[in-house]
Image (cartoon, rainbow over all chains, first blue to last red; front, side):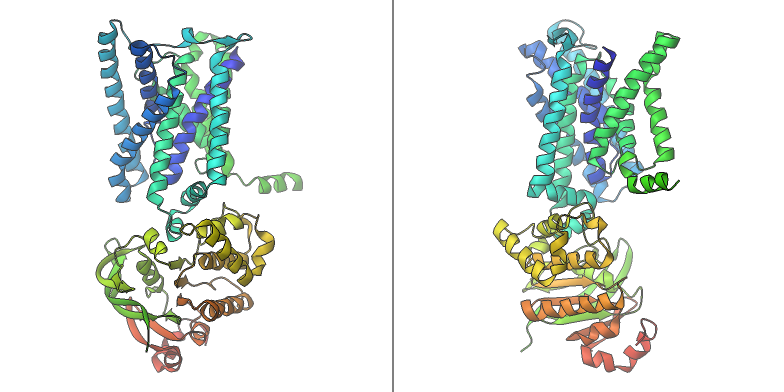
Length: 303
Length: 241
């Protein structure tokens, strides 16, 4: 059961960390609103469920589009700062501001929705709506399938299409990419749209495993950053590796600590992610994908 | 009659508020090699970057095919058959050699890219056996061959090269100079070259400019520059003659 929960959580973290890493590589923006993007998706899924009776799993394509729009709007609002070569710190503060705006909008919207449906919608879960196969929760299969489809799609896009190669080129060296005739602006826009879309989908799946309140995004952002940093913010594959390391460690270590010392430890789950992140930064500042493994192997074998 | 490819009029440019180039007037002739030489910090590389749209232009004009392209963004200049090869980071390290060549033809159609890659591989046969290797794993010479091969794939009319022999051995530098001449003679490319190895660069060039402190100190045919007393004086501070 705990392993099942850890895999589900990791799958969702991968979706969210992928978006964060993507926008960081292309625009150098550490997006603190990434967690709230997901919660926008959660509330849109709740709205579709409450007002139209649409199962949250079926609303994933809509959440993809809504998330994409949120990503697009964020980029458009940050663009003037990016154009003026704003520092990373300034961009970070700007995304914090966007996060606070989103938090306020989601909070207000939950009140409006509560009035429309006639019961409080400030906190909710979808777990009771889930199906099960051989005793395993449906979200385990759905989230895994979404991650597999996403990775396959990303592989095809990045390695088999002209635009994908251009996107990789822009990520590595935007200035050189421009000299090839690549419209770097388009690739940046695309990365923000995709980042928002992935978060929107993750948001639709999140209530199947935990209770959602308007501020849930601000809690989950810690794990998203930890996943991206541990994996390495310079490579997309870092989000995948970091997502599973952080997701599984956070779930398992917190669980065993709670078993040993009491349920009170469950509250401090995010501390596990932060400790792993700090340890990684001390040992490998550029994350796991930033390590020169050939050098490490050489050093190990020479000793 | 001399056919002008690019004409630069009263160009003032720099980075942000830091002006580097002052009132530059120059011309680049079609099918010729024009070399810009000058001491470190004279604005040679900034000049190329400015022509390609990578710096801030305060005033002046860059006339290309009778149009002022001073404020055209770099990705659109690439579509106007102008190619720029930076001094460093001129290949995508995370992409394979083949992907680098393909992306160089980003603005061309598929068949044209294939045709141009074949041409590039004929000029740089050294790349044929390393097509699947990541560019980040190549030696300095191989990287430079790839970068120049990429410039050829672009099917450009004007090729701007920023110190293509930097950090290469004299033997390899000589090979690169040979390839530059080949690109002019075989494909009729118009080449604008910035080089630290001033004497050798001027020897293969048709025309030359000497930059000092962001201004054109003197200009003329490559031969005139090579024999100019001032050039010899300046050159002593640039490279061994």
